[in-house]
Image (cartoon, rainbow, N blue to C red; front, top):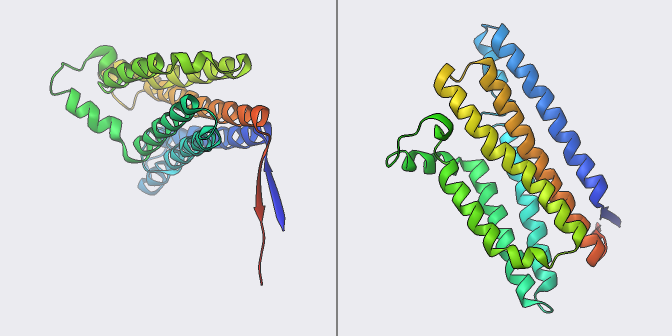
Length: 233
């Protein structure tokens, strides 16, 4: 029998190590992209480019966000019989993370951006028009969760604010700057590559912060998560 204890700090360090490795591989991929004309090398770099969908970094991001969804669902299960208010909000949080995970894996925001572009002139900071509906949804979610958020412990609130701010700055602010740069100088400019590198790193870092926050809250309120594995002959 093996018992695996999932600790907040160790888990966060594990995910942090992964995103550092992925970012370093991405930087190597960018270097090869700008300094190599070999088609095979260029095809290889796509597997580690943070701005490319359906590759190793995007699969990691989808999995990390899905882990947040599972942790939120676990908290909903804990609260189901004791606190209906918290149960509904943790369950809603689980669905929000699940949607973001599917979005990361299936490029939903790009499809939504294409739809929005039919009704507005996408230029400048809204060159990637998906930021408009997603920002509106983020504000609505923040308003709906305000009462729930205020009931959380002070430490959890601070961690959520920091993690959410890091994620939002990367996903929206740097994406808007990247869109403006892409419109002016194209998708192969060094500045654009730098902007989307920072964008994607902040997004991944924000999710690591969310994972730590959720696990830390679980530890403080319910104790550590222990997974028991037993082999039967």
